[in-house]
Amino acid sequence: MNVQSDFDVIVIGGGLVGAACALALQGSGLRLALIESGAVPALPHDDSWDSRIYAISPGNAEFLSRLDVWTELDQQRIAPIEEMRIWGDDGISRLDFSAYEAGAATLGYIVESRLMQVGLWAKLQAVSDIALFSEVRCASLELQDTAATLTLADGRVLTAKLVIGADGANSWVRAQAGLGVTTNDYRQLGVVANFATEWPHGDIARQWFRGDGILAWLPLPGNRISMVWSTMAEHSKKLLEMTPDGLVQAVARAGHDVLGDMRLLTPAAAFPLRLQNAEVMVRPRLALVGDAAHLVHPLAGQGVNLGFHDAESLARVLCERGLQSDVGDYALLRRYERARQMDIKGMQGMTDSLHTLFNSKLPGIGPLRNWGMSFTNRQQWLKRHLMAHAMT
Ligand SMILES: Cc1cc2nc3c(=O)[nH]c(=O)nc-3n(C[C@H](O)[C@H](O)[C@H](O)COP(=O)(O)OP(=O)(O)OC[C@H]3O[C@@H](n4cnc5c(N)ncnc54)[C@H](O)[C@@H]3O)c2cc1C
Image (tube, rainbow, N blue to C red; front, side, top):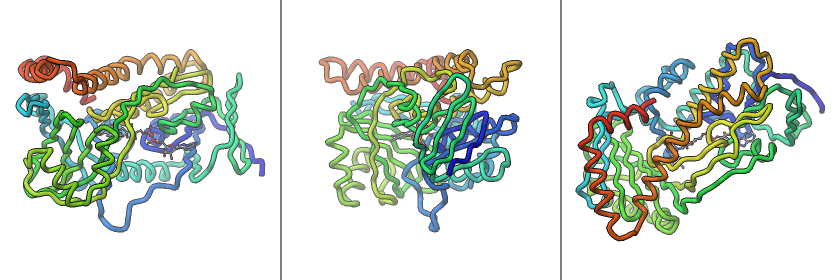
C-alpha cells in the first residue's frame, strides 16, 4: 500500500498536549492530521479512579474551555483546590497559599488524566477537519526544504509543511530530527496512588518536604485524595513492594494522620523523574511541544500545564502568521520558541532549585531552607507573584 496524503500540519502524539494542540488549530483552515500509536482512549466500565491525576491551572482550564473540552468533562469528578499547605522538613515551617488571598475562585483543579484524554478525543472525533490516525506506527520521518514526509509502517506516506512532535519524553520525532537532549536524572520516582480518607480534605492540597522526598496529597471529589510521593529510587521500590495495609500506614504516618484513617483505592504506580530539555524546540518544518520538548520535576504539578501553554502558543503563532503562507517556515517557528522560553526556564529553575535545596545534606542548610519557607510565608507580594505564575 502506498497512499499519499498532503497536509499542512501533522501532529505526532495524541496525548493530552498533542490532542490539545490539534484542537487549538482546528477551524484555522489548515489541513490537519493527528497520529497516535495507542488506541483511542476510553473510560473504564466501572467508576474507578485513575491514579494518574493532574493539577490543572485555572488558565489552562480556560484554555480547555475554549476548546469546548473542559465543560464537557464530568464536573463531579473534578476537585477544586481552595488552599495549598506546604510544610518544611522540620515539621513546623509552613507556606500557605489560598484562593481567597489570590482573589480567585480557585487555585486550580485536580483532574484524572484519563478523563481529560477521553474528553479531548471525543472532541477530536466530533470535528470534521482533523484526520485521525490511531494505533499506527511511524516508520520514518524526513524533513526536507519544502515539506516533511512521514512514512507509516503500513506503507502510507503523509506529507506536511510542518510536523509537530507531541510524542512524549522519549520522543521518536525528536530522534528522527537528530535533536539531542540535556538530561539531569533526579534518580527519583514519583509514586502515585489514590486513597479514601476518614475526614474531609477541605479542598486543600497538602505537601510535605521530607527527608525521604516530597509527599503531596491532592484533593479528589468526596473523601478521597491522590498521592504523589517523589522519592529516591530505593525508597520508591520499598513503597511499591508494600502490602496495601503497609502502604496505607506509611502514607498516613508521613502525612501526620491529618485526614484520619485511610484506605487504598488504586494500586501504587511509579514514574521516573528527570529534568530534560531538547536542544532546540524548533527546526525548519518541525516544532516540539510538551514532554517531547521539556520535562520538569512534578513538585509544582506543572508539566502538562507547560505543555498546554506550548500548544496554545504554537497554535496562536501559526494562526496569526499574516502573509506568511508556509507554516513550516523557520522564522515563524522561532517566534513560538522565543515566546515559550521564559515560562519553561522559569518553572524548571524554580522546581529544580527547590528539589536541590531540600535534597541537600550540607550542614546548616536545613534550618536555612525552613527559615526561607516561613519567611516567604510572610511576604504577601512574593506569594501573590508565585500564585499568579502557577495559575496561568
Ligand atoms: C509522577 C508525576 C506527576 C505529575 N503530575 C503533574 C501534575 O500534577 N500537573 C501537571 O501539569 N503535570 C504533571 N506531570 C507531568 C505530566 O505527566 C506530563 O507533562 C504530561 O503527561 C505530558 O504530556 P504529553 O502529551 O506531552 O506527553 P505524553 O503524555 O507522554 O503523551 C505522548 C503521546 O504520544 C504517543 N506516542 C508516543 N510515541 C509515538 C509515536 N512514535 N507515534 C505516535 N504516537 C506516539 C503516546 O502514545 C502518547 O499518547 C506529572 C508527571 C509525573 C511523572
